[in-house]
Length: 399
Image (cartoon, rainbow, N blue to C red; front, side, top):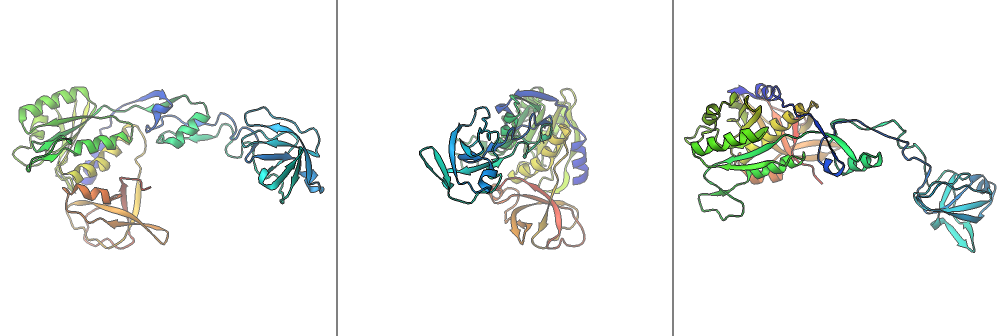
């Protein structure tokens, strides 16, 4: 059995070279950006009216003028107009180019308009209601960096700079493999001794956050069936994520079958809880990476976030995100096991704290719905104190 630190280092020491690919803009949602993106022009590209109303020359207002003859209308999407006389005004719509010769926009709510003349009924400040050219970003400014997860916000920015095609990091071919005679499909009514298959589906859902559409496979507790299934999976995938079959039970055949198939074991069993039986290896013939997690749902879920996600970032040659959080309570973690404990986030006095989630062991699937993530606590001979900062791996984004 090796330590968590050794296991983590070994996992990251076996990245997969996946490269990059170019995809259409909407197909890039959920992917990781593989290029820096720059502003192709000023943002905004012109002085832009932010209200429907009139554009005028403030000097005329400052000189005491309050009524302005309307010269014309400037709608959004039309070329810039020019104010011919400073004592006149031009109606402007939100998003329109502010006319040349004007420097202030007064919204309709502060006007009375009658027979082509606008009368100002509220105080006006010079430059109001104008979004100035380049005030957000100047042309050539980096807007997005390599490694940025692409969400709806990034899609809008990419569209605004004309990125119909986007360079993203390529995705691995992944298969989520569940093992066990006790598992049945989710649309079946389980017998008293059975449970519905959930771990592999949870893994598929977690992978989808990165745009990875993983396959799924269910293997019965039969050595021959497991060997045949895994041989096929190794040939067809870059990564296998297994759940179950790695403990010390009589039907835990995964380590033995992996050896038969020529998979190199990197390690088996880690001094951690949950997930002590975690098995990790590489199939040199196909370059397939194998993460074989214990079958309890909290173990599978925790180890996916603690090992696979950092491995994925490392494979993309991106830094692994690291976060910390402060403890809300005192904890004693004695040797020899590193502990990963479910917590919920709680703000207090402007500080983010981790509050322990009450759960019933690594088989308690429903406890995951109460947690925001896992804290990592290394074993030591003295307690962790209230307010102490500890490593934190978030697993959800609270709305």
